[in-house]
Length: 116
Image (cartoon, rainbow, N blue to C red; front, side):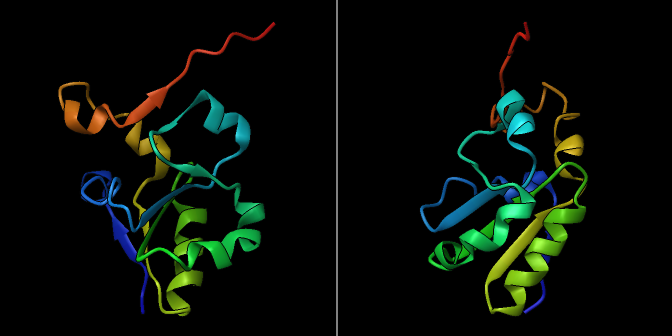
């Protein structure tokens, strides 16, 4: 199988399906600041520790900051026969979505953390 490269709009059709896993590959700090609601945070460096668990899902959709790590992760699982996708442009592309596209924008959870 080959990995799929999908837009956030395309990926959002699957995000809340019970057999779909959405994985945020960014750092724990970046995830804590903002992420897509329902995503698991597995930093890219820790991905191999979770591969067995991910194999229980029909679809796995990855995203990272710009799309590079997520495409690499999707390739690894696609080689194992899984339906795996990478969101094109990564989180940087997604957070630039306009508020007018409220159905998509609503899936991005933004937190306002104050640093002391």
